[in-house]
Length: 456
Image (tube, rainbow, N blue to C red; front, side, top):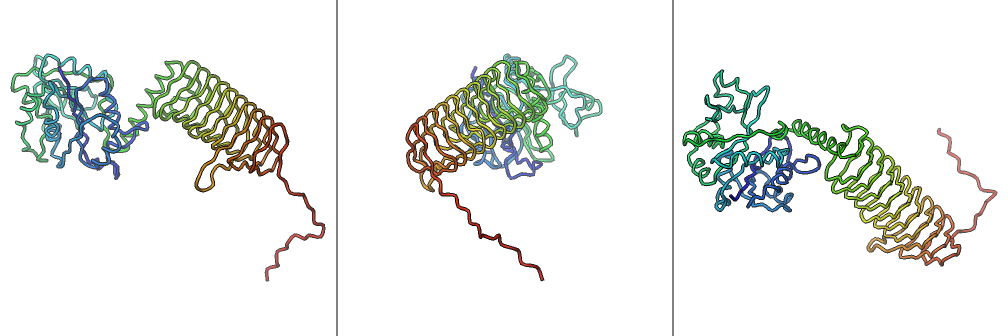
């Protein structure tokens, strides 16, 4: 049977107190809605429909990379009304799964379980057992355990309020019968809204056996209504991510002080100190050690490389046995070969650094090709930008660049060349020779330092 997915994402989210649509607020560096869309990827759905409302253009732009159909709910008239808007886009599927854009931690395993237990009936619901079900709709069953209806807290009798099994809102249904039930629900309630939960009572009245499944954890069905709940789910996500990494062989100095905001591919014996943040796609080879307070984003680090404290590495590739930091910044298209050293307050951008080369202190290297065994002295900069164009600096193998040198691109420094400290090099420097630019040192014996005038 073909499956269609509906994700309800039209809510205003007033309690977020934000101009940003609620479903775009980030959890683990990714919009809430993106988490739900990712969870559906493994379900082999024929079509995914997102029902949007508040901030619709902004939501569509932010999630433009996803293959889904966007349907507007211009007037928010309840969850049942929202699903009604999606049904025409699902006319050719057999079953419909309803999800929520502000419930980000739902897992594919739980969704597959719900679909499986409902395979032989027209309706399945996802329920959960709560120690304190106050505020939730209760699942009312008959003496044989069959689901009869959902009763909201305000409408529940004292006996019904004692029920601990609650509705999560997730359901899967036969498309044709769901369309019929949606056409029959009423909005004669205090909010004048069409509630999707009324479908359950209608199905029971029609004699449908309503299947049910439960999530692996309550966090899977916990929604985000305000920033407090968002922060709570963030910690749940990070706890689970840290636990999975440690079980796979990664050492975390403190799992509570680690943030995963992307995907980490780590080989054996990788060690991460406190406050390490992983963003985007990061690959760490065997034996990589990352010091405290580092940010790694869309980068690849070779085996046995050590990254010292307070480094930011983004879009860079680092070879094996390298030493980076502390306080180093590697920007996009930085490529460091094996055995390289990059020290404190060094920034590298769109530059290749050959095997064994070193830039240990206070330097900026941008738009450069640097050979093997090169020593970059403290205070060296490549002057790569003239206000309009960026130009290339080339430094040959085994060159020695003295401290406080400015290399004005485009310029070439030959293999084995030495550049004297304090030089401004604007023309090519030949191989195996000393090149420097330096004015004569002068002392003026009669010079007097200016004195401050006395205050009257």
